[in-house]
Length: 276
Ligand SMILES: NC(=O)c1ccc[n+]([C@@H]2O[C@H](COP(=O)([O-])OP(=O)(O)OC[C@H]3O[C@@H](n4cnc5c(N)ncnc54)[C@H](O)[C@@H]3O)[C@@H](O)[C@H]2O)c1
Image 1 (cartoon, rainbow, N blue to C red):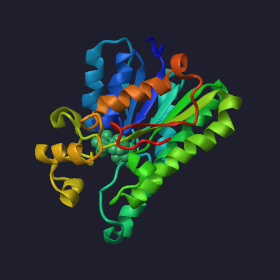
Image 2: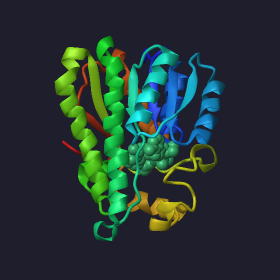
Image 3: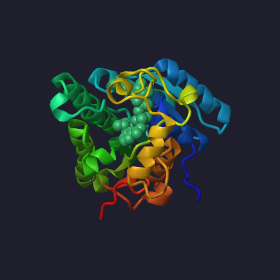
């Protein structure tokens, strides 16, 4: 299937680590120009080099960006437009949480979740529309979470933010798709731990060994991951891999194969959530 993505200009927020990295590499392999918009520029540079090694014809750049900061986001979008001449696709991927039970969660964690997952998506979407609307084309893909679709313990406020980014793609589609040719869709991953920590996890990743997440829930040992598969309802018999999410993102981003799909959410989670 030819996705006809070659030469497209792509922004992936949080593109330096785990899922974001796989999305960046997926677009780079299709010959796209990809901007890795991340607070972790050191890990971003590593991913940029991996893109270069693919020699697929596109260019990758690292653009320092804090998605929670409106000015930083505006300047990121301008920089990408200046470098690549247009913005075809935004993937709102930067996000995450530290799993804690609701009544044990400090308010500062809720505020961080809302800022990162919801405000980050609002900021980046608003900024790229200044370029996509005059061009009368574009694609925005929000990375949600099955925690926002089915509800999960320890993900109360995070889940609410991820339900929020699902709601955004529906309302934005109804406001803008027909008038401006911009499509909005969401991907909802299930548990997708890093496959290769050495290569794919940055210092700012939730999955960094010894980090805040590990302190909250303990280490993700192979035995523990195996248990998650066994009791977690993953009918495919495995957990998610970052490439699984990337493949679905590339599909949604392709006007060649996906032009009649708008305002949808696709769970890529091995059947963890099955929504009719
Ligand atoms: N991995 C999973 O199990 C899983 C499951 C469901 C949903 N998701 C969603 O997938 C997305 C990616 O998750 P991941 O596992 O790759 O996370 P990750 O923590 O490994 O990577 C997140 C990236 O975002 C960057 N980042 C953090 N704050 C930022 C900010 N303010 N501005 C810009 N960049 C920032 C980090 O530097 C890092 O590179 C998130 O939206 C997450 O909620 C992940």
